[in-house]
Length: 279
Image (tube, rainbow, N blue to C red):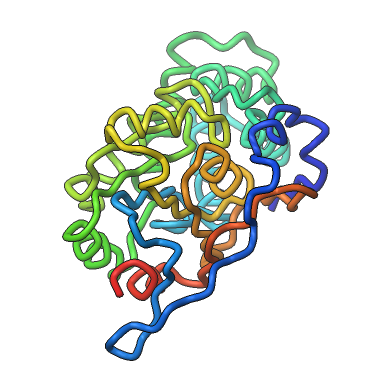
């Protein structure tokens, strides 16, 4: 896991996005007629927006390790050997690079070129870069899996709300074909991938793109995600409500900073959305 405890040093724009004096306490719940509970905080919600990795699917240390193994095997095939330790060092740095670069998203081909030239004493050709990029794409699509409960949950939510997906990932093709493989695409009224915008959450631009596609006001939306910085701070800063899920172990983790927004709710499992939003 990559832990970035002091993000204020390289995220100068974040604090300026946070409303001064906003209510950061998690709301109380109200009783439902059927004896359950639902949060009054989500009254008036019309759109439920989701992160993908470690929210709707698991994409943490186990999946990252599998992806690294595939990249290593491909580089061995291409060059006859591969320093797996050096590969991991470069990829770990690339994963968090957007947070050190004012939220600019990585370019997949440039990342592949850096990986080849960082491990081998060569100048990577365009064909080699494309071959490795294709392996990255295929590896993601092959690795991701969907828990049995997710499609029924999305189906139930879509009967009451419009749904959207906003994911930080440099390759839009990987996300779009991956969720199509898993049968999720039909449930979303909007799909936005950071690689197609050029900026990652918590930058407001990916959120604005999603709101533009939805033709919705942020006050009507709740965002569900696992990342304290990208998902909670990003969504709250633009005016959405936020639900933080801690079900899966993320690969990168951001420590809270003084003055950060608190999520409107925290859940330990995605199934808890049924009580919060379908009560």
